[in-house]
Image 1 (cartoon, helix red, strand yellow):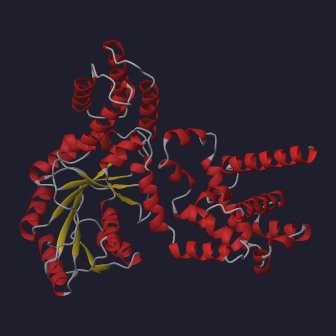
Image 2: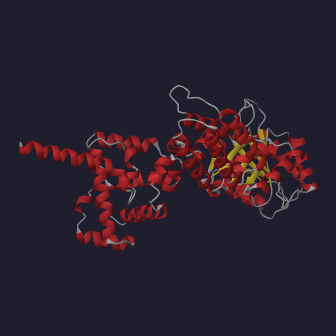
Image 3: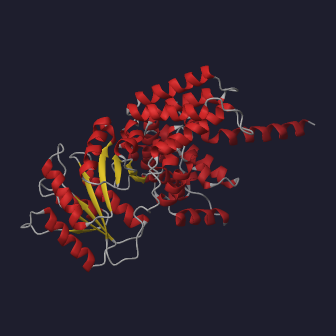
Length: 474
């Protein structure tokens, strides 16, 4: 996600931090690098010009502020300007907060064909149901695309969200919308999400249809779905769209595959609409509420630990963690079933590559030699190896000798060295837990070939052994 842009900015910031004095010469060099990085990321030219002008005005001639160096002051200014660029105007209206009303909140989904609008409708429905603990109803007013309603119904069913299915004889989107609203009122739904027809391009029929839906249903939110991979073309369409149909926000899809990030940085300035959500995977839970400050930190290579912690809290069941903690506290042994749960926690967080996206560049740089694809494969291999073991072997790995290893390797489609590797890593984690290491610190230690995970502990053990040897000699 935004890899190229983050690399560029991280490199620029490394250079800035070392500056002890801000002069006209080095200021011009810094601004030129930032300008080039933004243009290369496909950020709209007017946005780049305005961004650079704001930084120049605020940074040139800055003296040292308290304990900050001039370089750090510029980094702070760049960060603040990025947040301003990404954030919405002073709109204090809470987004998708449930209001104590008998009327359901209506969310109208709009966008061109092929941008992921229908899937995003399902994602938002799931997000509201989980985050707002609300009763959600989905429906489709798309009477043009074959199986559009069926697709949304399948998505709704897969996440246990209700779907309003209109009668086949009704072909007017306005009537479908009215019927869905009446149904939502009758059965006391908190939110009604309406998917509308997409088009290959802007046309009068499409605009008129959406205008009629907006006028009739009076939605609290009209969200425009944009494919972030389409760059400036997508933004110009959204801007034209906003002139005819008043949009309340934009949702960027396929951001996980967008290494440039120009659409994300330009969307607010070009369309005048705030970014509400970003799609970060094809999975139905792959939707993230947009936070300008956190994304600015990611772009500058500062990471987003808060989002990672929140994701972990949502994905990892606290009950399982508490059970394991109590088990270890009571003196019971850490076994391969527990180890397997630790590996599954990494998968629940989206895998190793996903975790690295949230970390600061300094940490990511240390892990840059790791082949994340191979690491993901090795995690799956380890899961297969544990699956090939008997219940007794998982509970007491010490009984696994040569003949058992051969059987396990054959059953899991792996090799004996790979079985040995798993057992060695399990023993390392087990010993760390005996010494009082926290589970959280050891999750990455269980990942195959993640060499840096246990380096500190190995050094510590060596130092202790050396001290004991010296004492014995005395």
